[in-house]
Image 1: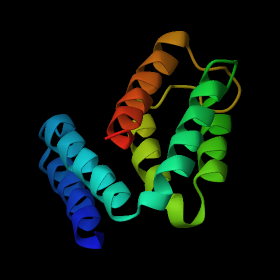
Image 2 (image 1 turned 180 degrees about the vertical axis):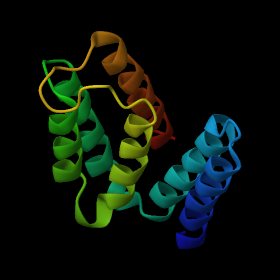
Image 3 (image 1 turned 180 degrees about the horizontal axis):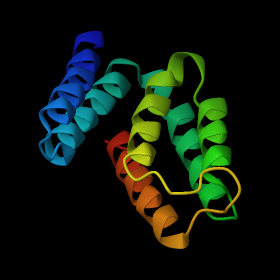
Length: 125
């Protein structure tokens, strides 16, 4: 399990440093790591799904980038930190210009919600 997650992180850094479009291989590796961790730890499934729903609910209102990152880190602490790493990795790929004072645009929130929906779908497998 740890090897799969480390391989996904390693693939992310290798493709990012090579300057290639890393979205496809990184998404596949991240999805595999996410599914494997939940498969090997079935007790994690319910709290992870609840946490993802919580983040999705926060995105339904007015939220700044920093507030979103803080909420993700509060929801996914301790043994669920791998979800925070995956989710913040997705969020940081399209970092908004203003991070602290201005609320996130609806289009940006919609993209994050699509990524959360994909993780929820994978968690349901």
